[in-house]
Image (cartoon, rainbow, N blue to C red; front, side, top):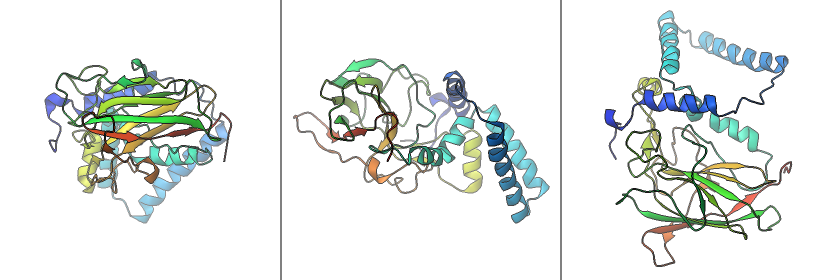
Length: 290
C-alpha cells in the first residue's frame, strides 16, 4: 500500500467532514442528560489538568498560540471524531465495559455507517469484480454466558479494502463495499465471505496528521475487521478483530488492540481459496454484570 493518501483517494477534510456529519445525525446525544454537578466535575478537572501541564512544562506563548491554531484546525477539518476516536475512545470503552461478562470489545472508530444491507448467513459482502485481497471466510456461533445458543443474533461488519480505504469515506468506491448486516441462523451460527483488509494510516493531511508529524509519531493502524454484534435482550458488543504478525499490533496509534481480539487464520476447510477464521461470541443479557 502507498505510504500516503493521494488527493484523488480522499482527503482528511473530506473524511473528517463525513465523520462529523454522521456523528451529528447519529442520535447518540438524544438521551444525554448530564447533571450540572457532573459537568462541573469533569470539565473542571480537565481544565485543571491542562493548566497543570502548562505550569509543569512552562508552556510559552508561542506554544500556546500554536495550540490555539491547531485546535481551530481540528474543527475546520472536521477531525474531532477522528482525534477523539484515536486517542481517547479506547479508555472510554475500557471504563464502560469493565463489568460486562462475555466477549471483549474495543473502539468503534469514526468509519461506522448504520443501515448496511441485511444479508442471511451464509453471506458474501459486496465486492467489485476482481476485488484484490486474500479471500477470507469469517464464521462463528453466538451463545449466552451459560452456553445456550442465541436466536435473533446479527453481525454488523465493515472494514477497509486491500488498499486501506473505507467505502463512503474515499471516493469511487461502491457505497456498501465490505459492509453488511449478517443475520445468524436459528442456532446462532453465522458465516461471512469477505477479503482480508490491509493495514492503513489514518488521514495525515489534516490536523491530526499535523500533530502526528510534529510529535514524531507514526499514523498506522494494524489490519482489522470492525464488528458490532447484537441480539434482542442482550448487550451490544463493538469490536475490531486483528491478524497476527502485523507490525503495528504492538504500537497501534489508536491503542485498541487486545489479546482477546486476535484472530487465528487457517487454510479454508471447505476447499475454497484463501483463509478462514472462527470467532465465537458470548453475549451478556441486558443488565447482566460480572
